[in-house]
Image 1 (cartoon, rainbow, N blue to C red):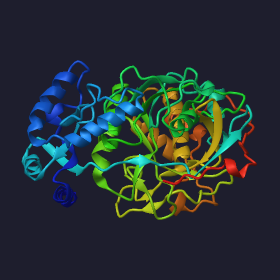
Image 2 (cartoon, rainbow, N blue to C red; image 1 turned 120 degrees about the vertical axis):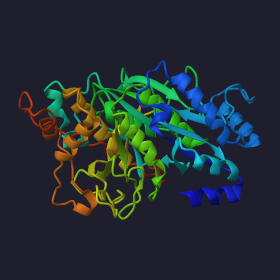
Image 3 (tube, helix red, strand yellow; image 1 turned 60 degrees about the horizontal axis):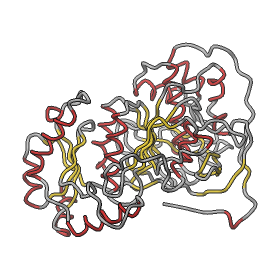
Image 4 (cartoon, rainbow, N blue to C red; image 1 turned 90 degrees about the vertical axis):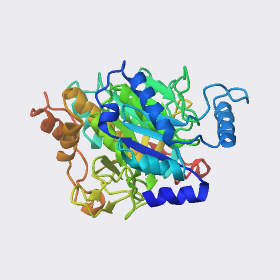
Length: 451
């Protein structure tokens, strides 16, 4: 990592880095009242190690951020790029260094690690189709046996799931009452004041619907229809790593216990390990897509040992051909993904009041986040590790899924409930009917998007 940082400095004269601070610098048990003072103190001493970003590029970025926010083409106050950003809940800092300051930073005893600030990107759906459904639960919801928990009164009520994506369309009927909090981070990485729930694309609305969508006449596709989300619009464009870190810092402040994220960098890089460690340190279960590039591929951080890595399966209990899978030379959790979930022909909502069927590990990931929300309602005191163990322990791998592609297989909500609570469900439940979205007959309506 040091070599990569030095190469970037040699080419550009400076580069952005992610800095992990030692626990004693910020403390990981800060109260909300402590945060501003601790952040200011850290920003003051860190300021000597960072340099101001390129001013011409920063001015252009401010104009672009203003444009996308619908403001006048004049750089508004507060959109200037900061010299250093401190994220006290995460124990991280972000800023630009040059050859002189990076050496000073490396020698400071308060610094735990320094990483290149690699840019995550959205794990886009492999296929998107306009679709119509029916009021009964979708095939993915039924495959996980979520309706059995609903019938026992467990629908995720009282649980808030962190949602890091392209935002969410707050006016969609399927998401009425489902948004606990919303934050938008502009292209410069600053939080947009008084932002209302919106989706910069359609990916975030679709994934949100799979987690917490309320039943409509077009389908019951939300795995945890009684839960809510804290959604941050952080992707794509602009200073992506700034936006993602700011969104995560905000989500941690909402005291969520589960986070759904369909973002990643192709291949393996340890650059985000500090970020995942910070999330786990805050007792949050990171549920992350493994990627859509097929066998012998994966994305970071979805391929880390301490995330719940999700691949995609289809209604025939086959691993989807696009679903990533890989083996790592590590003792703990060498295979990714950890499990597979419904990720092909997945019906959910999209902006404009519509519905679409999508294929991708991004569609599988919110199924597992929704399942975790159901389990957390069943046992509110459960830790992130408890939830993870129950989900993984419930998995059954069908004979049609090779272990090197599906790892543990598909989770079972009923068994996960038993593992987590030590009890059986209150009553037996009749088998729910399945609704699969109808595929559009129009070939021109199909769109294929591959990251």
